[in-house]
Image (tube, rainbow, N blue to C red; front, side, top):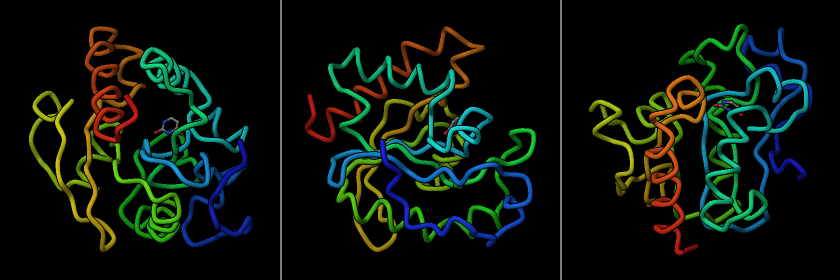
Length: 184
Ligand code: URA
């Protein structure tokens, strides 16, 4: 699917431009109801220029398919658009440098529901500091970028790759997000 981000292809707002192969903007229909937001592109995403196309992405696709929704019906993006070296967590200044692009993507799609994939995203967008096990599957009213949204927290699919016991919770959270978005 065509990336929707307005990010210039030579963006050098942060140091991640030195190691990236591709800028990974969000993908999805022009208008949609829910955005799934991950942390940062990984190796596969950096190579292909599209978010969640590796093993984590397949788990997201499967969870959507199980709920009868296709990847093409939702918006998928990340806090930052370039892969941090060695898949480290994006730093505060990197998230800050990319924030404007995320705001633009989210606003343009008109989504009302955000599904925060993983702890970093939940803390960043919802500002909660409870344990992930207490947050997953819950919906929070949030005010973000000057607008109201419902945010649903899910484990990051990558966490489910090495902790398969988290998969049912992940699938359930995806379902909760789709329900909150009125897609089920
Ligand atoms: N993990 C993320 O957080 N985002 C991706 O796009 C891929 C893996």
